[in-house]
Length: 412
Ligand code: CTP
Image 1 (tube, protein in one colour):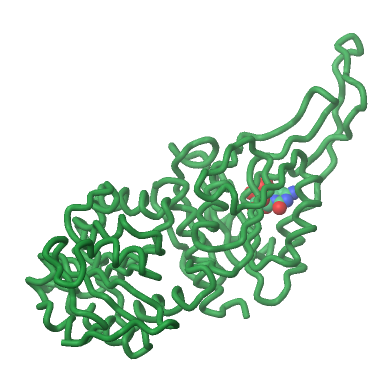
Image 2 (spheres, rainbow, N blue to C red; image 1 turned 180 degrees about the vertical axis):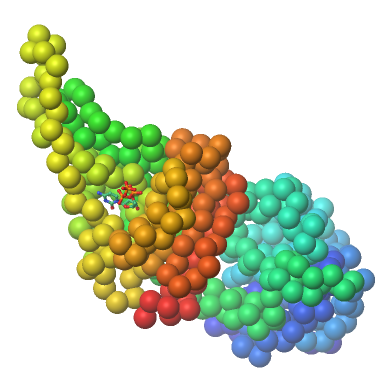
């Protein structure tokens, strides 16, 4: 049985293990983290011990594995000791049951009590059968947790217990261990830690005269969700927005907000901040045409006015042209017909790395809804479909793809 003293510079990691067959892989995650000189404290749920005994974890860990909230010989309140000292809590495997209890805020065992008694970043690694993974309840609980800033590693497709095959497999231990190490050794602990992200949002308003405007149906919700989720993932975020929406209180103070009205103001704000940004996400519905505005209110007596429109600058296309090496540029496309073909053409035309496509004619998609369904296009890769879900979840999926590009070095 090991029990070592914590050294000052060692990252402290709580490794939560829930009751699933993939619990055996958690042993290897533990060993890799110990090899990388982390101080690891395992917590096993009672069901986890049916799959792998606590002795195995205790033998490899920095201190004996714990399984119970009560009767700990070393401390009367193990959940606060573990939760307050942790630099990261990783749960691998995270079962549907543990995910549900965490999303609900239940704390009736040592693992869930520790999750609640901690301000440390949390990384969940779900593993379960495909049918369970696809349940709306599981997906909604994960969406809730992601919205609160919890990081979730998508399970992989492959062989599952009982001879089945499908999505739900825990990624290999080296992948999980590498992710944990990148988080604890990164600057602020998220997938986008230390990165600067610029997001635009909302529909611009083009003045006809001092009273009237031409605008569009964009609510700005998707752009605001992107800014909020990027902040929760550790990025330094600038939100350039034409939408009168409040930001979520947990991240409002972390986001630099620039309010704009017209396409020209948005272009000017983007020009100011984009050159320094690692990622620019153009979620705004920028007017393609603006009006040669009148200084005075147009009066009815003057007859039916004729309004002349002039094209605006395509901000996304100029970002694509002037990008600096390593910068990731993300565009959005709202389409109503020939959705994928139009979007593929737009991806090339605008020179972006990712294009997030909405079919805005579909039910529950796009403007002013709280839900969205999108396809993410990347040059040379298969389209990636994000089925109908919350705009926060769409934001998380888009930002995960952005993080993949950054960490995978595809934009180097
Ligand atoms: N966009 C932009 N500047 C503009 C117009 C659009 O940066 N003046 C950006 C949007 O923010 C979005 C992307 O371009 O990320 C796609 O916008 P969309 O209106 O779908 O494409 P358009 O090029 O305007 O093509 P069309 O309207 O003909 O489909």
